[in-house]
Image 1 (cartoon, rainbow, N blue to C red):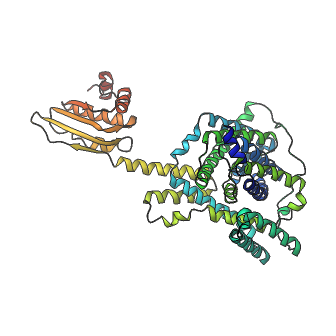
Image 2: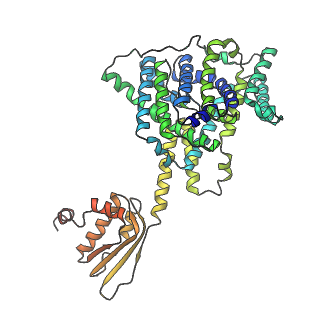
Image 3: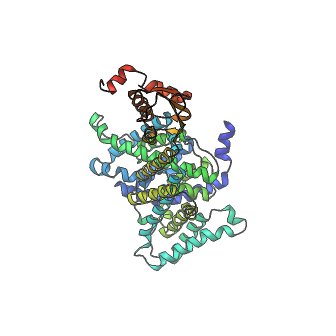
Length: 496
């Protein structure tokens, strides 16, 4: 335990601190922008980013992942803020955290194993597109200086790592921000800066409780929003954790992450912050900058609040063009270019799932809807594919008038009709043997199909013998089957 804590906190000190500094700088304009989207004061997003990042560093299940105020969560809370105000948002944030803690206790994080690789790839590509699209307002109707600064920033980000020794030890995004800020200040360029995004807070966050009536009516108001925030937050956090797992070749504790996100949101709500979750863009900035441990996440949150409260005069001078360059780098690095190359090689169903996931997320700007549609499509394709592998083989009629059917494969809701259609109920036979030694029955629909086959043969006067059921199939058939229950068969046949 002590060894693990030491490795997670102090196994990569220099790189974690530098990476956390880069992330802190990138968090500031985004936290302000997300606050504006949600319809609240910029300090609400900044306080949330500070609280969530610091708390998740201690209680999260994925070291090196950055959590803060996010656009996906901001979109869910817009209507609540507009109709009921900030205090109801803070209350909803507290309830969101409680729901996420419950989800972790119920081990719902394990549901991530049902999300296919095609859905994850679609999620990643959609986020890369959204991150890039979010930079376009900073690149439209601007002077040539902005394009020059953005281009120069990208040049620094990609060329600086080629410099021997120093290029590998200092994150190039940090170098980009420092150099571009210095150039902007020296030349006195009239371009958009962080200070133009909104007012920065001048005090540390303080503990406060939402000023709302503690009634059932209040609960009914905030519950739908809290549930939506909890689902979107966990979904984005767990998907981001999966991506960081792949980038770092390490594993994460998904259920601990669920509970950690919940605790972080409770703390954010108690200190005047909005609900948040993991951020794929900032997490990738962290990883690409060398951040691997919990120290990088803690540094990002701690440096963020120090800068906005005590170094705001300097912070306001950072040109948005420098941060745009960093985020363009993130979008390029996030997009799975291999998925484009593999379109010809991958199965058509996988390509459809990936493309539809991308399309829905980009069109709706709602990650939860996109992933839900992707998982649904993947499930349908899987069910169709597995259902096709079920066959019923018919042996020759023996001398005693016995027909033997051998069922091979998986029988469930998608293959039950095919299973019933494989039997010839009009054939005049005295005895029917149904061999299930190579089959598996999964659900109520498949058991009902077996009942239907047996009862139809018996109605035609044939004696039916079912053989070879495995233990799992026998359990479900014994529990839900009715073909051996005379009373139930009588009801089904309507007394005939």
